[in-house]
Amino acid sequence: MYELLPVLESWLPDQLVMATVVGTWGSSPRPVGSVLLVRANGEMAGSVSGGCVENAVVKAALQLLPTRTSRLLHFGISNDEAWAVGLSCGGKLDVLVAPFPTGSCAEQLLEALRTNEGGVLLTRTDAMDATQQLFLPASLCSEHPIAATAWGAQKSQLVETPQGRWFVHIIPRKKRLLIVGAAHLAAELVRLAQWLDFETIVIDPRQVFMEKTYFSEAPSQLLRAWPAEVFDTLKPDPYTSAVLLSHDPKIDDQALHLLLRSEVGYIGALGSRRTHESRVSRLREAGCTEAEIARIHAPVGLSIGAQGAREIALSIIAEIIHHFNIRSQKGFTHHN
Image (cartoon, rainbow, N blue to C red):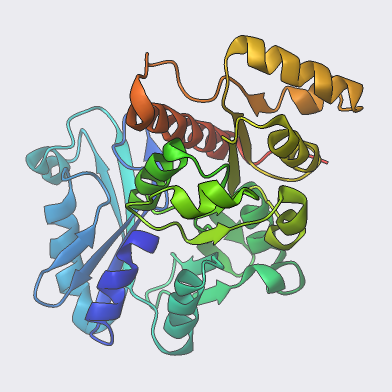
């Protein structure tokens, strides 16, 4: 939902409807948790189907807006209305159309997006009033075990409880990219990652690289420091990717020793296969296990025959996105 934050800040406090994908089967075009916002004049932002059923969803949203009630819509190839608007791929799609949260719940949700805290939004799906609650990560375990379980798995889902049926909507933290080494490739990677809504942090203890490398798109943070000086503060977590680009074993190896024993979600290291073999030998000698070493993606990036810094940056960010998307389908894997 982070891409919708500017829209929300512009449209609120107008009354809005939020349509959310709550179930998919087969070749559905958008995953569970995808959101479409609709305002009273018919303007929309976001997507629940890439254009297939948006017209039908907006129609339902405008009907429900004055009543502040909710409705669960079912689309599939046998649904005449869905067929008319183009859902002919053989998939099925359930969309919950409900009022956007108001009052303190709306304020908390906006603040969670602004601060990249994330949270879990619960919406009642079997009652007309669409009761909504937002739980922040810090209070999940103590306040709502079901929300806490869904947050741990990072999986939005419908849940049956004795109190009714709820859609547990995971609003994850924005993914963060740590780049160790402020070279030209780092600048290209920052530009692409920022465009894809990553938080970017560049770390390098070398003065010349920090002062002379030109960043056409400024990173979120630019830290002149050794990895060991800042990683405790940055606390790499499952939402974090780290890419090592310094070409200096003193810097990259220090970062690896810290990252391999952390919860970081992805680790990539630049260099040829021969360079990586030397790196692996050093890590083994330093006591790293084979399981830890296997976490490193090296040579970093998808194999697309990349040439030049921009194409290499593209291959790296593509591998990161692929890694996180595959992991989200399976649930998070934590490393100790």
